[in-house]
Length: 457
Image (cartoon, rainbow, N blue to C red):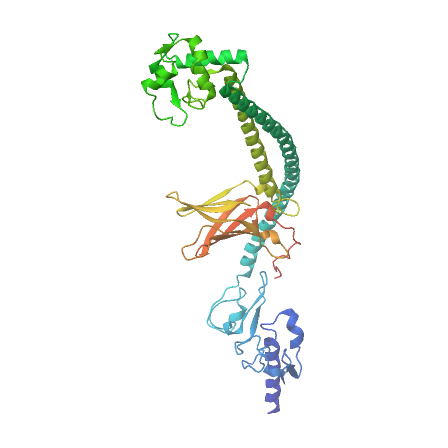
């Protein structure tokens, strides 16, 4: 009888010793050293050690059953030598499905699991090595782009200073052109008033008399007739009405025609007074005083010339100020701590997804264009929205075109490390809310060398 008890005790000790390490990581082995009692890891209960892994849940935290599925809150540790170790819910232990790549979770089930950890580890090691090579190359390219960004930033600053100097010079020229135009307009106005008042001196008067006589003498026969007066002269207070024959004869001194000498002492005096009749179209139309008087034509051309020069100076000044404003807006954007993102400004990247072509223009806008040619704004540049550790990992573009469900379209762009700068993917997880994956070397971040995949055998 005692012999059988000894055998049973030996068998039981061996059974406990083989089970107690199943489903436990090396960091937890200190809790499972074989002794007379076992304390639940949460400290809630002490049980006999032989109740560990006996397929009955005694501890609320499931710590007494790391290698069985008895406890609903339990966890089973997959050692997975050659690959990544990880935990699975204890409910998956011996459920007939292979969850651990080393097949340790199905030690007592009908499932025939193969140990695939080495193959998985090999593939992951190759992937990680590729990622590290990409990171190394990306960081080298990033350094080049940082150096280019610094130079480009300095160029933009120098360009701004040059434009500001040009604007100052143009402002001086603009004031000079305004002064010249004002003088030309004043001279034109004085000349016109003097002409209309007949107050320009004998030589000027003689010249004006002759030019007005020629203006009225339409057929150039050396005399003015009733028909010519009716065609070229009108009442001051009733310009639309044509003079009657009697009125025309009266203006001609009672006759039906007059020469230059008689004109100078009769009709000319009446026109100079300007209180009853005047020459038609006296504001610069063909055949008017402005059009016929040589002096007035000269000052009119001078005024037009100064007006043209002033307009050109104003346009140049406005253009330069617009360039200054645009450049200041660009320089106000956050391009990273080392201006590494500056090269993206004024660049656009496209990606076709089914019937749509998406265009990302960093620091400007995002658009979507259908095959039918309709283009929709998915947002304009808003801000950086990355994590506190890396604020430059995400861009937000907002206030796009209105969405039919309300609100406006917006796009979140996630920047990932790569050796090329390209738009990689576009998705619309919810209506009018878009997400993009944008790959670029400047998104690469230096990291500590990663621990290799577990390769112990």
